[in-house]
Image 1 (cartoon, rainbow, N blue to C red):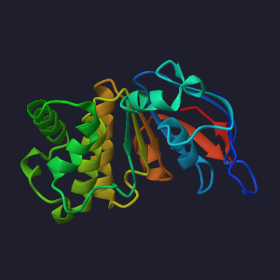
Image 2: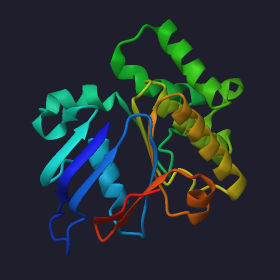
Image 3: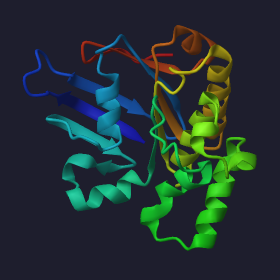
Image 4: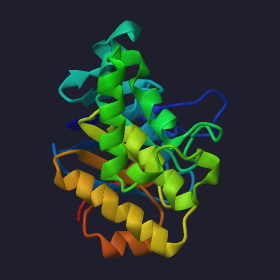
Length: 221
């Protein structure tokens, strides 16, 4: 599902590469933790995977497509197969949960009735169908993160990427979110979670890809 071959990413004026000769693979339907200290390259790697940036060297394959060979006009279609959950949620506070989730479907040209049903189903999966009309600013942090996850899965992506999805939550809410991501994975979605939380790494026995100084230091269980 995800393959990287000798991938490097260098930012202008940076003292060292953000990613340096990275090789890794994530199988279809796998759940993988991406971990490492601050500055290890986790966020940069995720940005390459959700096509916000391109690498300077190497090859990135997602769902069998070589990103380097895709024109900019072809990227939006591939992005629809990739759901993203951010640590800071990136929700519109003054809109409802339903409206926030529906934003992910706006570019697909679906009919209003299909959009409403897809949004309802996504919110139901994360346990928030009963709060679909609530403004996001009136929801708790854990509920806001669930809205963000619903927005990421409403497009029925092949891959779900999550950047520190529990970083702003208390331990109990963090477990709720991780259980939800595990359930999404159990339904067939490939899940990659970036985290530096050792408790999560111990509690959930998924494969760990460890980064340090922009390089893969281990990729075992």
